Length: 448
Ligand SMILES: Cc1cc2nc3c(=O)[nH]c(=O)nc-3n(C[C@H](O)[C@H](O)[C@H](O)COP(=O)(O)OP(=O)(O)OC[C@H]3O[C@@H](n4cnc5c(N)ncnc54)[C@H](O)[C@@H]3O)c2cc1C
Ligand SMILES: NC(=O)c1ccc[n+]([C@@H]2O[C@H](COP(=O)([O-])OP(=O)(O)OC[C@H]3O[C@@H](n4cnc5c(N)ncnc54)[C@H](OP(=O)(O)O)[C@@H]3O)[C@@H](O)[C@H]2O)c1
Image 1: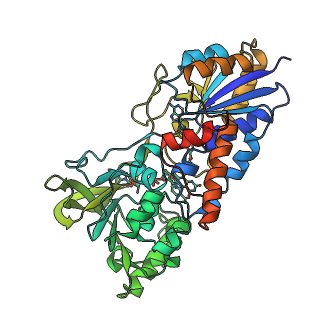
Image 2: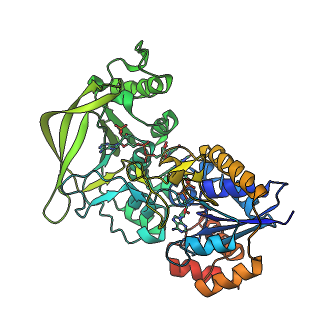
Image 3: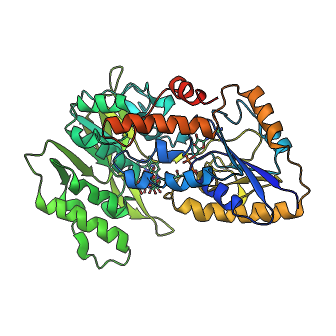
């Protein structure tokens, strides 16, 4: 049987896991070209995972193994929709898998959301992780309080990054501009807001526990918010919730360490209703909520009408990412995903989705592997029956070179990787990231 060839757009975990599953197929044999709009691969493993979590980032060694496969090619600096179109990919490949993740944020929809000093987590996280489009975000850390909206793991990452001692941060691959800005930060308190209660928070217990390991950090929790702590005999409280409550209860009972250099203050039952300031963020207005069960039994926050005003100079809105539509593909605007049946794009032959653009913006890295396996099973099933229609690898390269003369191949990425790691070794860090597209391309294109 003639080899088949598949284009995957997006080189985050779901793109790489899909590539790995395709390359493992014995019948048909598949070649994989993995595209990314950035000159660098790995998606949120590079641009999302917190710098102080190097173990989690080490999943990239699995991606390197996949990238070393003889039937695999990486094409970076190629944006679908700008440099190439879906139709052009479909002309050259037997199948196209979209693994583009969730490229924007869920809006809060409140006045003042866009004031300078109010940032979406996707931008703030991109800023400290060296995403080229976020390096000039202009983060102002001169206030003494920051407010992080949301009770998910991204909110915790952001809060931790704002509180980590410089010595800890300086050992990570945090972007240099962020390292320098955070070293001069005046922020002493990071208030983390949950619109519902402590039991409903989406934090992982391991992420919460990380706070105990930070030197000179105080954690402020109101005992009234975690009255039962871990002893809950309430069946609505799952074991994961109970573990979180135990930790929060412990901090609440322990009281705040007055000597702490910085503190994270958890405030529950609070929704932001307005961000105010004269030309930039100066305060945030919070609605005080009470919890009720809705018709389906879900615990929801209901505004009591009571308001609180909290002075702050920095707001990070960590209320979830959101997928964006891809031209020509169907889009579920409510969920921010491409509608599909087990990965097959609804109403489209030879087009598939995987990862956050398929499921929505939740789930840890490993979940994308099972998800990719599901989509790839269907890709392979369809490929077996279809007539091959792929272009020769050299023809694809020639076409791409005409579309993007500054193409980053696997060799180019390896040069970037070596360069960053070498600079890291000199500074006792895992890597020192290049953060501008121009610098990345200069290093990568030294390869050719
Ligand atoms: C801030 C943050 C921290 C996280 N930390 C952890 C953690 O510590 N542990 C954990 O297990 N999980 C973590 N996660 C979850 C994990 O990152 C996701 O499950 C995973 O990255 C989703 O994979 P994906 O491939 O669908 O999307 P992504 O990782 O977002 O990859 C999408 C890729 O598509 C590319 N792309 C987008 N549009 C185009 C286009 N038009 N043309 C070409 N390329 C395009 C992007 O550049 C990107 O490389 C975190 C998530 C976030 C947001
Ligand atoms: N170390 C790790 O493993 C790690 C690190 C980072 C991220 N991740 C994963 O990446 C995924 C994304 O994380 P995330 O934190 O972006 O999303 P998330 O887990 O979905 O959390 C979003 C939070 O925002 C709140 N929220 C939503 N809309 C709001 C609004 N209008 N006003 C106030 N609060 C609002 C939600 O509250 P409600 O519950 O009330 O809706 C929830 O607390 C998750 O699966 C996460 O576990 C993992």
